[in-house]
Image (cartoon, rainbow, N blue to C red; front, side):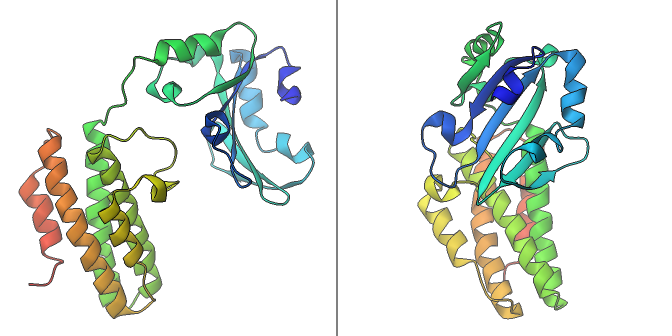
Length: 251
């Protein structure tokens, strides 16, 4: 933290994730958020891959072009995920209702942001539902095609994509507050029937096994789509979504 706090342009530093929630273990990530004055923000974003290289135990970075964060890995299994926020653009968000541990707050900006965010509810936008359902249906169809064509490794990766959208649906149907990436800690919060089907769907790299796994996942996803259409007022056609899955299922 001292690396950042000694720069007067850094006005806030806080932790999120399991460290802030008090549930961290030996393999937990460090979710660090650094709030920077506008005129220095671009510098930190530009240097986000170089800064961790000077710290003891550095191994490698994960990064995405154009992003404002970098995930750095350290010996033996340390991992620090650092986001750089422009202080001038910070606004209340339901995400600030999640556990936060403030480490540095020169002007009380972070504390004020957290306070103003407490009454904001987590909501599911129709575009988010629409995107996930479309991608889930596409993953199911592509798995079917690739398994039939003998592209088995590709088919297995597509099954993973379908599982991700099943996890999203399970969270939305049970009004679970998001915490992080949908796959993370899903074992701890999943509905028992969903978890059971997901676990049983992992299979060998064989066409028959992949087809059987796909059928079990599609049956589950179909029931979820019925429930999603019942819960949310979507403009998508329910009948078309169900037909897209029914043509995969055996007659």
